[in-house]
Amino acid sequence: MTGAIHTDRLSAFFDRLRSAPSRVLFLDYDGTLAPFQIDRDRAFPYPGVPVLIDRIMENGTRVVFVTGRPVREVLLLSGLRRQPEVWGSHGLERLKPDGSYSVEKVSTEQEAGLTQAQERLRSQGLKNRMELKPGAVALHWRGLEPQEIDKLSDTVRHLWYPLVRQYPLDLLAFDGGLELRVRGKDKSQAVAAILGESNPDSVIAYLGDDRTDEDAFHALRGRGLTVLVRDQPRPTLAEVQLRPPQELIQFFSEWLAAS
Ligand SMILES: [Mg+2]
Image: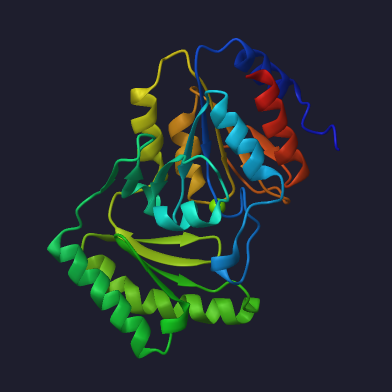
């Protein structure tokens, strides 16, 4: 096991965690807990991770998943025995710790735009790369060669840009594709909502890998530790970087030991 995660910043964080009145752990799913797979339905967590997260929840940490995936997919794939809190579809859906579920309403106008987005992909023979989820249509290109990705990205942007102008929708680039979704929804809102519900003395961390997690890093600035989980460095607002899976598992083990 590498000792690389023992930076001063992390040591200070775990010191505070030990005496914290309450603890909140935000987790992205794909690329953070689960390595990317060409088949998205087989994106399971790194071995050892579900057991650690279950134990962290048992020991009283509020674990909150914040993901672009629909809630039900995270529950199916994560391999957890306990049900975590999940904000899915970039915060449009919410499964609370008590099991109650809510999804924000999408306007008729937004539905019309999303339907057109699907039709435009189908008309280009892209149905098998398309994913429909609450409030969004995604186009996935994982597994393609870089030149094919460039070409596909151009095609889809060309198809979808007119819809962004016509409907209250946003076009979002994520690691592995493009997504058209209801305007004004990103991971920062999930973070802000949980901060509003939490004890001001809570010790908090957010672990994520994607560009979409940068919104959450920004929202948590000054209130929690922000962690980029990724092999390669990249420009980020996160304070710390962990290389999965070893440093990730070490982080969870230390979290558990500190609670
Ligand atoms: Mg991710």
